Image 1 (cartoon, rainbow over the protein chains, first blue to last red):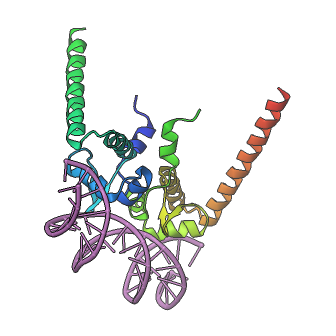
Image 2 (cartoon, each protein chain N blue to C red):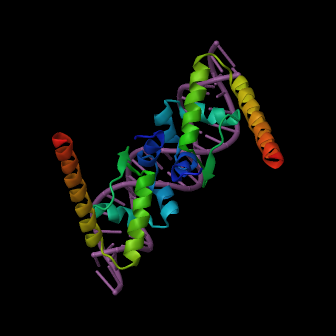
Length: 99
Length: 99
DNA sequence: CGTGTAAGGAATTCTGACACG
DNA sequence: CGTGTAAGGAATTCTGACACG
């Protein structure tokens, strides 16, 4: 279930300059989306570090912004997704327990 | 045959400071192995950028160095591998052509 | 040969703020 | 609200060199 490649996708090692090149977003935009809690980089000695997964998420955010979706709405969608995943986890645990 | 994860593994986006943390090698060592043609980072505005594949390769190099293998020998092994891969590619082409 | 280090410069990143709308 | 920009500082990276062995 867990491949070695998974670590590549989720390991936060990319600096903001490269993320900006990869996504086409300005550093200002990327930092702002963090402020709005849409993205959660790690920090290595103060500097933000992103994963490939973060880069993909930023591209999704960019698409939604172009469609006119506000950061607030994107944030809500994220919250909802997290809520659904937790519920799913609960249900899995439930059915696992009951056969 | 080609997964999306492949691009994660080979995309050169990691700066030398992070590679140093990831491998435990000093920046001096990493640059020296490049000088000896054991590793081939990209450059983004002058700064070296490495892939996860490069990071793994550096760990292999580190292991060999600890065993006392010289950079020259490691370089020879690499040359040999490349030679073998080219031969294999030739053979694949050969048998594909002849059924 | 392989690695450490000090040196000086150039490029990167960070934060808080002002601007505009 | 979302993004641009100038500002000043701190941390990063680069190269060529000297050191040691």
